[in-house]
Length: 275
Image (cartoon, rainbow, N blue to C red):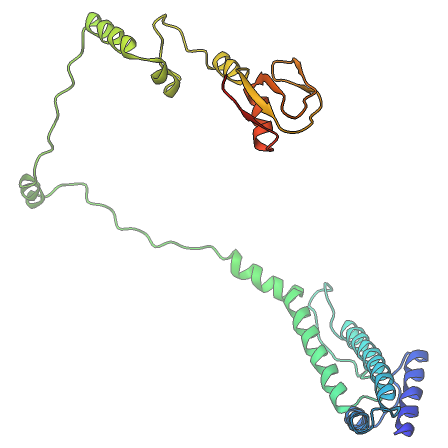
């Protein structure tokens, strides 16, 4: 057990210090799993042994080795595809330069060539050859088929068929009202309008033939004074009528604008009372 652990430490050191892959056996990853499985069984049989601590250390070391080797393999694949597949230099060409990294395991070799294929496909999609082919297909003019000329001469049979169709009904124009009648009608509508009707329809007129002043009505409603019983201590406030109210004490009965009183009601600091 300890012998393989020392071997892992040596490989870890080589991967850290060298830019190339450290030499390992072809069954390197299988041996890692076998070694860790043995440590797990030993730790289960003897909880007081050093197997559990050794297992944790081995997992950390093996993970670092795997990640460093993956990074080196990926970088090698990218460099190789850069040398082998030309871009934006006329017609691109692919001629794989044999720079396969040394000391690959069978699993890593499969990983390396899958990266080469992926990068090759990507470069093929963005190459000038691919783009030029797309331009040729899109630049071709689209020829629309000519439509047959429409026959504008109505045949005798068509005229006979149209004769059986129902003719459109032409409605009579509405009768125009005389100016005096219109004026009397408007006056009747004005007289029937109440304040509630005016509020519902802002375009309606009042009896003085003027638009209803909703702004002044809203302000007067907001500044409407109400009587309130105070529940808690509250400091001075400025009302919507720009007057100063307060400070307030519990059980005070005060008069202030409705808008400000609603804030007291909402926060349960007072309630409206009628006197």
